[in-house]
Image (cartoon, rainbow, N blue to C red):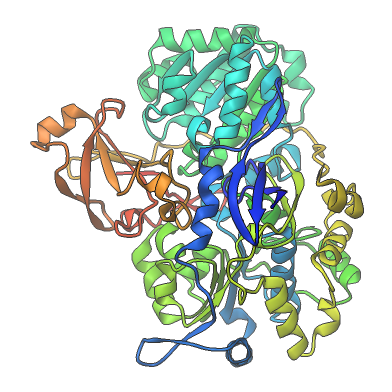
Length: 640
């Protein structure tokens, strides 16, 4: 029996947990107490998630026959099939989806293979669905694609503004930090579209906004702080774009908050005073902001507020390594050396000794919906459940040759032509980069599927067979990590050997500049109608994660929430003659689903709430194919 410290493989906190292992089996998982002042790492989901690794696993490669049946094959046959498919199609017809569920080293190799062997920039990740707007906003205002501050900054805050996020249940170890901060006197303001667990359990002030008005609230708050003297003109003028910013932000008034956001002036004044008087403000935001039509605008305006108040900005990410996947260059717009340009292209080519394409590629919303690819490699994602406009996505998956590399049997596997078994994160060795830019060592804890292969193994072998072996002559994940620290500018501050031996280090998060975003005024696009009188809000369950590939296979979590439910205000249910437990058909402009109703007084009148974790109720059949205007990202959270 031995104890191994490795990462949790769920959310962007990237906690280190203590795994007790005996004979290759995991016996239990315990939290690691950092200190009484900073709390512990881990949460109830992370402590039991490992149990899913023993169930519903893809254990060998499979090929789909013309009859539609799957046939188990050897890895040699799988490689022959994959090699032939790549040779048959041109580079513009092939696309790659990397993953926030695998190591930095695996993601780096996926994008390197796509660019050097297939010669395409058609590579993306699920970050396109959740935090593309955050990255766009941070890059334009601070010049960095990562939160500028640290999770532990919450512990010293005297006021914490939580905007469109539910850390109490979505990031429970971060919720622990909030509890500790509150015990030390911090005041917490929760601004959401609907009441959530963070609002109920931690907040001193709770505001619920009319859907789609978040940017109006933030700009009106900032303008009120300026008008009331909490932010000086001298402070504003110390930043780039100050004159243009000041002209536009002062168009927003407190009367707009009352009229458009449906927040009373008394409530708004309390928030203005609390934030204005704060000396150590912290601001958090999440997908309640980023997945709306004005997500980029709202996040950029929150950065304005943070700059003007010298606040700590804590921007959480979804999956454990989705920050790292972006850092590795798994984006159609970025190389590992930076945003695609002639300069970053030459730099990357010189460092690796190979040519890469110079034209930006397609995003996953483009190659899955708008401009379908012919061959799609999908690693560690379940787009047949998680994507918007699912009817179009399913049509693309049926038409394309889909290579599916995943640990579990999922809805997407039903569309795959070649299925490859993927080790789960803690079945591999390497690194991840969590939401705050902390690189953490992943130790191999156990191996439940002996035949599973990582992307660095698959694409390393495939590259050698195609004559590109010299570019993929890494003998270990450590060799790949050393290359990462050479080509990624923000990772050059790291000592690869130290990270590999000591376990963690921060990437360079120094802002390249501090530039105020000039607010835009545009119409509120999320509107009810007589035909569609309700707004649908999708949220996360306290007991599940993403599309539920892991959590739906854990009995301790399923017993708390075993099925998809539609949460409604009792008044709305009464008006429609619906009782708790009834099955209802829900229509949007784009599709329909049948789902069971659950009464919930915390849901505002006129809004219905559901989860997206369950494959038997495809909530995203309702989701519109609309795109955020600044981030090439679909709206997946709130719509009529």
